[in-house]
Image (cartoon, rainbow, N blue to C red):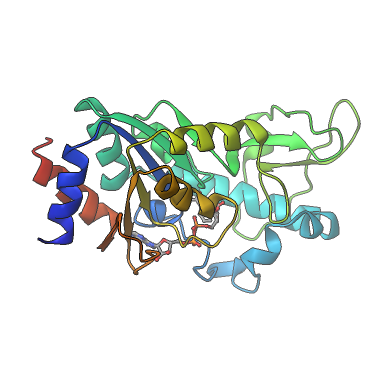
Length: 253
Ligand code: NAD
């Protein structure tokens, strides 16, 4: 039996599914994955370095400008066939939840209401001093040139610098998001992991947690990222091709 047939049979036999998604699901919407090298004026920077509180402390205008630019790119991007496949499955009657590591809002814009964002959101901002959420005006969010350095606005309460509402390396995940993700993963029948390298922890532990809770795990990735377990199915290919094909096999229109 082919892997895609096996995956379709596994899906047909269950009701409660968790999609666990990473940067690869948004790649074909034009949002670069984490490991993709930065291009244009950002090319001289290492994203792993820019996504840290240290980088923000050392050069807030560089990091704030980079996030404003990423926010703008994400808002210009459109959900792709992989994002829409998830909402089509939900409409077809499966109980679908999404736990994402992505900081874009493409799942929501593809029609999925309940999305657990483990790493925060590009659309949010908070004070780096008192951690209060900060509501920004449209003129504070615009960026005219790629590579522009933008001094972050100051907090009205403590005068701290506003920072992106995302989780940086070496920071804890938001408690609520992590607890929701664990609860969903421990009670699902099937977890479909899409476009994640599985190296950013603790998020990367979720597929293994699902297996320990007796669920089946389907991986969709350009590369083999399976852990070699008996209840794992590896579908190699782009999410925009694999997920619609899976739905076709299931007869979901
Ligand atoms: P990653 O960059 O480490 O891994 C991406 C994975 O997607 C790789 O395994 C790659 O083989 C796979 N992939 C690439 N294109 C694909 C496609 N078309 N179809 C299927 N698979 C594809 O990303 P990660 O595992 O999500 O972890 C890195 C962290 O970077 C995330 O936690 C997130 O916070 C952040 N990030 C988010 C975004 C976003 O919001 N879209 C973008 C970049 C980085």
